[in-house]
Amino acid sequence: MELYTKESLKEVIEKSKDEFYMPKALFDHYKSLRLETKLAYVSILETMKNKAGYTTENTAYIKVDNPQIQINLAKLAKIQLILKWIIPKFK
Image 1: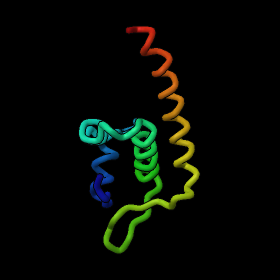
Image 2 (image 1 turned 135 degrees about the vertical axis):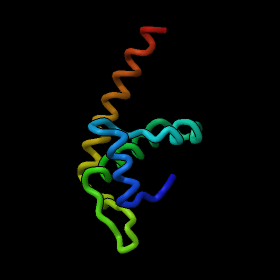
Image 3 (image 1 turned 90 degrees about the vertical axis):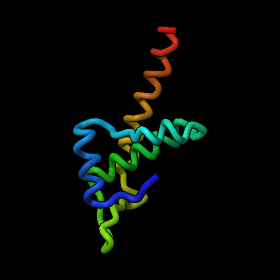
Image 4 (image 1 turned 60 degrees about the vertical axis):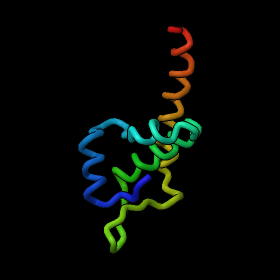
């Protein structure tokens, strides 16, 4: 994937508003990645949208131990569990 800058994160924020941003390429080009890995990426990106720091080169970053990553991941995990329960009922 890409390194985000202040400008590219602004674009992500505008695209996603109050929702989790899930890059299309993540699901189209990386089909062999496990869903859990993709959700972790989305959680980290969501945390960057709200709490990013920036290097002198204007590249966004977050600290690995940021507790917001875990909170976002828990929300995504709940959504995944609900979908796993609902989708088979409609097949």
